Amino acid sequence: MLNSKGKPFKGPLIIISGPSGSGKSTLVRELLKDKSIPLEVAVSATTRKIRQFEVDGVDYFFWDKDKFKKEVASGSFLEWAEVYGNFYGTLVSEVESRRLRGAGVVLEIDVQGAGQIRKTGEISKSIFVVPPDMKACEARLRARGTETEETLVKRLASAKKELEQSVEYDFTVVNDDLEIAVEKIKGFIRPLFLER
Image 1: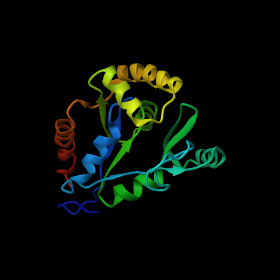
Image 2: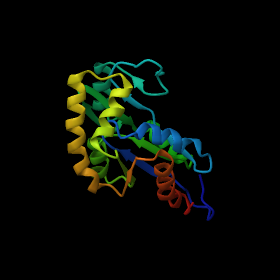
Image 3: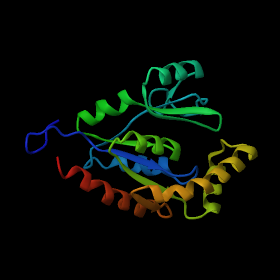
Image 4: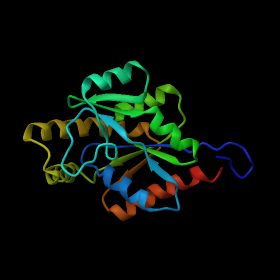
């Protein structure tokens, strides 16, 4: 895509991270509803089991560990990590095809993946989503109905550690009021498209 000066414009890479239960997925869904901002989500690959209502190729590419490891070895991932015993990764092909069309690509990834992207030198803007408090975080995780007590304890302990890394991000938003949080993120994102 060309900008107003006839030069190639590559859409921005936008990283959204935050602990489990912070509401990242809900925020991303709300952001995508605003068609005035050309945003798309790169579909990640994972080895975790598909959940009810998820669709392969839409929510994630659900792969087995052998396939995932082969793709890691072939350099197919922009970033990848093992989280709670499962692999998650962002495919370069999913990101670049969208950015070359001028879309801003949203990566909803954990702090490990965001750190990997920073190390590559890839230019990106990053947003860290903070839950209002740990009680709200726990309540959101319980409401999902996907966690055992054991995994819930692990996720909450991990959330506390992840919160310490928010200083590594360009922008931090507290997801207390969904509408306000979405508007704050839009305010941060919109200027990324002005120099088109």
